[in-house]
Length: 416
Image 1 (spheres, helix red, strand yellow):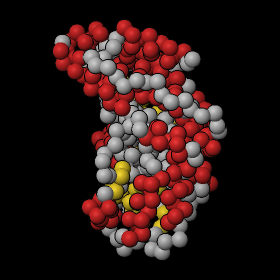
Image 2 (cartoon, helix red, strand yellow; image 1 turned 90 degrees about the vertical axis):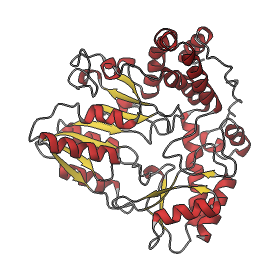
Image 3 (cartoon, one colour; image 1 turned 45 degrees about the horizontal axis):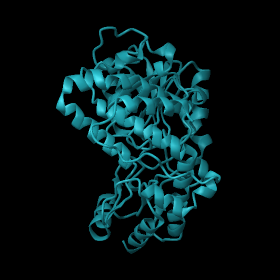
Image 4 (cartoon, one colour; image 1 turned 120 degrees about the vertical axis):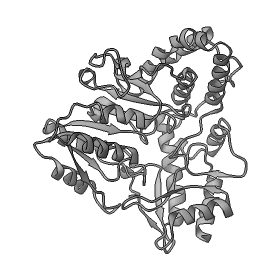
């Protein structure tokens, strides 16, 4: 058995939640390749039953926030009820001992050291620890992308305005642009004043997977640090931070890990910790202890312990199995719409450039109006996107999405 799972189960014996959490003896995963398992509908029906479902609605906006399994939900609620009985005792004594164990579990998913991982509340907070904490001087430059996450764009603009640094913005043109062209576009933005490259692993607006390994290599050749936003890759795509070569990595844990809402992590390569200023005040702001980023007085420990149940679920299902299933579902519905006149995919659909998130454009139709029509008339929940070069409807199934639900969406979009 996974040594971390053994340690986690031992911790739960001594620190149970208030109420009984649903059994975590999950059904056996069939001995099949991820590609073969992706088509085993009987198994994925069992997986679907492990998640809460909204009756009558099809949820195709898991790119915003994912539902957690029943066990994660119950653990969070039950630990919170326990805290509410005697808050200071249960927060600071009973539960606090689990923090380091959860840190180790998350670090293992990243191939990082536990001392390089901080647990925070959301991706914006994690991003801002790096964006406002990395040492920069007036005249220094950062390279970022206009299609990065909106809060990251806003944060870099604020720092540039306040501290007289320069952000050189790359602008992605759309799915026809090749990876080689994207790398060239970023490299052309580098100068001898570039100190940091801000990269998004998977663009949230359209699900495009950027060639981050090639871009990181180009940055490292020039002595440029790399901040990688993995909000839509962690828990789904391979995110070995050693292999990716980034200096900083941030992600949401309430997306593809299906952890409690909200939750996030920040990875800082050990040699970079002391120079990175924490966003919140710390008694030792220049220390090399990753915990300086967590000095938030009170943290929601039920969220942190709930993450243990999400890590356990991930270990049972397997990241590769999850990725294969979601790629299968994406191919399933996009292939049915490939011949539809008046529809345009703003996502490159080749396998190495997307995974599950897809942006569908209906030229001449306002995305918000299409989203509303799908919800009101067909009970299908999607996300309208109105962003530079990216207007459309964002479609994001999850492992709890069935082919029948995707059929319902395809029929609805054809009628719309």
